[in-house]
Image (cartoon, rainbow, N blue to C red; front, side, top):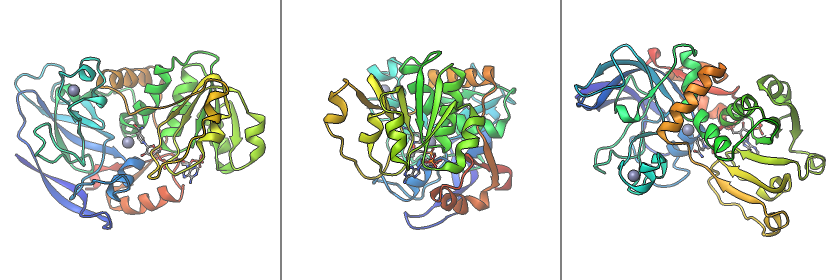
Length: 347
Ligand code: NAP
Ligand code: ZN
Ligand code: ZN
């Protein structure tokens, strides 16, 4: 066992504060990673504040983890000391159920061991995330990060990157497809970059007029202001695919009207409250309303390799860990361009 420094929330109403955790001894299949950077995902905030229910405390959030390998177990094959590595939302799964066999560990039928606010597969040992100085993870859940990418800006690929890449791939996004991305935050800006790199014609659908120039710089070809009803009339029936990343309750029915016949809208954002969907919004046009949850480990590696090939990283604001509570407040005020990343040297 080794002691690691961390930042933790003691309850749903307390601010994150310095904390100490124990990391397990490096087992035969484990790697030990000295964490260099960790992104701040809106899911961290939802869970710290127990907005989805069932949160476990003390909670050390963080699932956009990158760093350098400092030790490897005797049977580790794919990594060596000094390699760059990443860890995302999962640290283990049962590995034998039909979902795990299909490389969809995120849907493990025995329940995933999430990187934090969860337990290891023994269902006893709590897991602690990346707002910490080090982590010990099985190599099967460790990703390779290309040295070609800026390491701090690559951290958000481990959640925001794979969460947007996976549905774009699943719905077979290809050159010329019309893709709408809803919400220009951490997930949304990765969706724009990745969809554009796949050759799609991308429209940013945002409540923030002030983000239009950024959206175009990120690769969006068009912009629609969703606070104006005229936008929904102008773009009705246009999109093959809509990627919805909004973190707060909003009217799905309006966005379904923007899909072409048999188009699909994928929910990625997880607002705390449910929103009603009218049958009318789906039946006229045989439309598809669906969702997506991160991506499997193999697909996460595929996404990291795709990003290395296309030079894609996140647009980040690198901050010292002491500013994490302020960053949460700014995220709620929609004041993030477009991902906060914690510099773990400052811990
Ligand atoms: P974020 O950086 O805070 O971005 C959310 C964006 O949604 C904002 O930038 C804003 O974009 C828009 N928005 C926020 N409040 C809104 C409101 N009241 N009405 C309309 N639009 C609003 O968050 P994130 O880290 O990208 O995460 C987004 C959501 O995805 C969260 O719910 C998170 O938990 C979830 N998530 C899901 C998965 C998954 O696997 N499915 C993985 C990671 C995160 P505009 O200013 O452009 O309107
Ligand atoms: Zn996340
Ligand atoms: Zn499984």
